[in-house]
Length: 341
Image: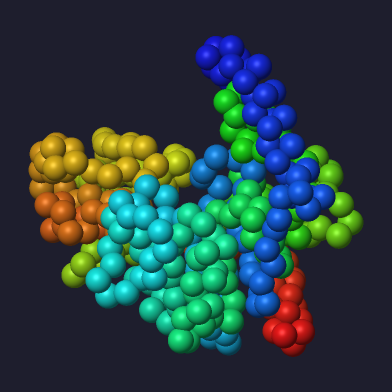
């Protein structure tokens, strides 16, 4: 913890008090939460960014979209638009935000919408002529105006919420007690060989209630990087001279997976919008080398002057074990909710 964060400790106490009062008002009904008559699954975290929400949402889309009409609803962080927008063929990353636009491009059989007001966003989706049967709320754990039917909370391995503190001293958006709202807690970004003893130690540390389920996932990298026109095996990419480029919250594992020798790693802020001068500087650094970036960055960069040498590496969330039980939990909730309708 750096010195400035320590100095700001009194503000963290104040921020924690304010968020606790807000949650209390929602819990007792002074502030109203709105339920909806369809399955609503909220995916989020207690901390700021970098826990792997996007691959987890994509996992749920793959699990559900063959059987149900699925919609995702995000706020569209750092988008250059306002209000409710339903993605269509005219949409782009600037209008939707990079993550929703990624969903739209990868999963053409679902609806993708953005709205900072999640209650209004759900109402708009349900008023559509072909409404969804399930809504996945992206980064909505603290959005208490909507009462989701099922909550999935993510926490990163090596940066567990139980070891963290409130903003600005730590990275928590609300008190650790907020984890009690979760039906499922997932420890993300684990080593793929994390032992059962280590998993049990984390389980003891988190001390979840008996009605909560705990799962462990790791980032599963694709074997291939992709451009607009071609693909290259990752094994070959690792041996090539290249530039690695990331504008995500925690890019260390991406760099570590691909970096070899004298490869240069260029880091930008999460959801960074690249200026023309920055793009030209990157192109000059790369010269005739390929540039490999994350999938989230690629949706913002693919139409730029970097396009001819730009590739991206897809990732997905995979369970260390008990993935079938996770699927069963989700499908049981959805099936029961749709029957109750």
